[in-house]
Image (cartoon, rainbow, N blue to C red):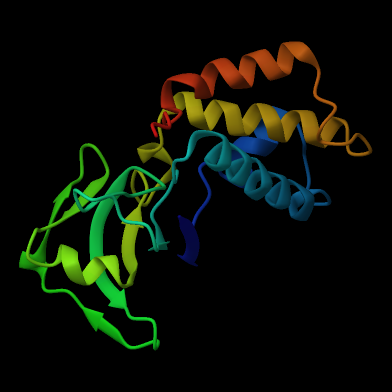
Length: 187
């Protein structure tokens, strides 16, 4: 499965003002750095959990749909499935009608109905989704926002350190905040 970001979030889960309060930074000299750290921390949390924190568009590309026609939609949570297309070996794309598949937003899965499945076997499936908890920082679960701000604070204080060198207490704290939100992988 390949997931391609098509529309990034328009806001971050932690505002610049909130990050500056947490960091105890006055003035605007460090604003650009803090904004960059917030975005990097959001991407880190999203990658670690398999979730989109704020509304964003994704294209999921699969060339190996399961025999039951089930496709896992990731990142979660899925807000909507915007389009499902089949792309044949010659590159021709055809959009599936909404009645050719069933979406289960709660489990972030899409099932292509039996009449369409033989076509799917010879095609690549492209699914455009909108994912995220919502459009505003308050829509993001507090533990995930806290993980973002903890990473921002660490990276702000240790700018020269490699990201791989994270102190164990911070790692444990961030991991414990993200753990309940991690998507589990099943074969």
